[in-house]
Image (tube, rainbow, N blue to C red):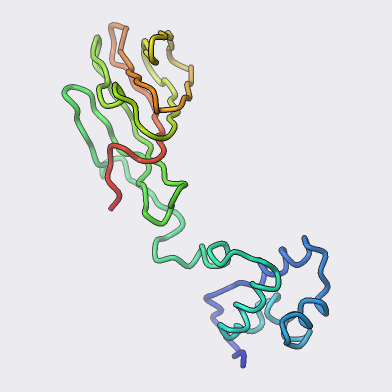
Length: 196
């Protein structure tokens, strides 16, 4: 039996209504398939009542809704994560500095990414990608110029350029300029910063 909930911490109604409308189902059709009243479905969709868990699961089944989609906002992790500039985790590989911009989370599953600010001194190079690894990478050069070696191919890139590639082949980024190279780099799945 649903109960009135003034605080309404769980708001499934919008998602249920959106999916129902996209599928072209009426309230009556959903109610009949779920074995509940049309009025109850309407109240749940308008967040007037919080459904009992078995009712919610039945509605999700009728609408063929993935439970992860339905509950994604209510995971323990907050949906918005901020890393303050003075709180970034850092990893150094020889003289190359990686500063974490986005923290990977176990809840991200196959969509987990890491993003970091990459700083390479003149004439230095990255090392970890030299053997290749699973996943994809994307980089944006903020300052300086670089030589990107991918397998036997060589690419010259500079400030304002972006690059993306399969990370499975050997690859290294070399600062080919006389000034510090700064780049934003995104990797999936995460490689340098362990999930915590």
